[in-house]
Image 1 (cartoon, one colour):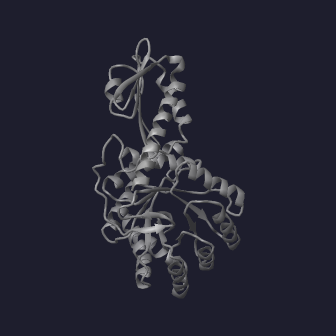
Image 2 (tube, rainbow, N blue to C red):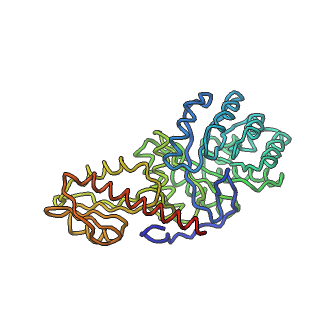
Length: 372
């Protein structure tokens, strides 16, 4: 872990499955995923977006496959990317069979929506044959009609009952390698549903607040809901659903996990909100650093504090720290004063030092891997 220390969260024990080469559940790190919003038949555009997501750190990417034409396009896409792909399929079992042949790493499909049990069995047999898991996804907005009538409106209990119907089908077909999600746009409904299901099955749980909203509002809503569940130890993979560029979903997902010390990837910034004591423009400096260091995936803690009141204390607790000072700003490396930078050279100089420390960390990590 980073200098913040190990997370105090004790995670729920769950069965480990594999989406491609990414482990989900068990003792595996909580994976972060997103979904493409391009037209799947536009292979070039979809591949570009998938690569953008991978560059942002995505562990898994989901692709919608609404037609057999899209399935054939998926086969081409799969050959051009290097990340596990989940295929999102509804109703047509033949599409599921085809994408399984074409290399899907997971089938997102609700068994109860496929129709006759012989069709479901064919999909499960294909998943077994190709060694790929299934994701069951329950949404409050698309519950079965009889459950809508029974409960009158979407409720956590209705969502769990719907989920267990799908689970029972897979149990009868002796297929335990699945993960499950129960999503609603309402935070409390989502949290209650996940808490109920967590004690009823052993499979990993895919977390998300569906249709959460735009970049700002959706980030807040997702952080509140998923934060509550993750703090309970619930959750093995997450997707932040935003009406925004999917790359933002990956960024927010990792920021959320970093804040709970559950994942370390990229720069973990500690920054003051700034006040009249600041000796440099903290907000401008942070905006520039965040933009310039978006490509960094190696875990590193960086503090940006505008004055000498809290600056030294925060700077000593991170890998690279910046403390505002007069006439020059003080830089700390590994908790010790290292050099000083003038305001006019601050961003360029500080970025250079951060990247130098990243290279050192990467070299040490590579050495550990070689020796192990």
